[in-house]
Image (cartoon, rainbow, N blue to C red):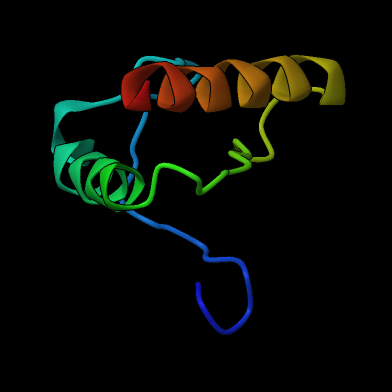
Length: 75
């Protein structure tokens, strides 16, 4: 994060076609929350992803809802 200004995180999980964060994602969410607490000036851009099942419109909506779920959990 300090070198490139970005980080790709893995370990935030969702069920198929859902935007609710799965419980096993808690360690990653907690780690990110700790980083944010240590540096309140830090700003993050959260981007959600999906698989390639479904059309672009559905997947874009799902990606946005997943990203919003992560932001909500962190706030």
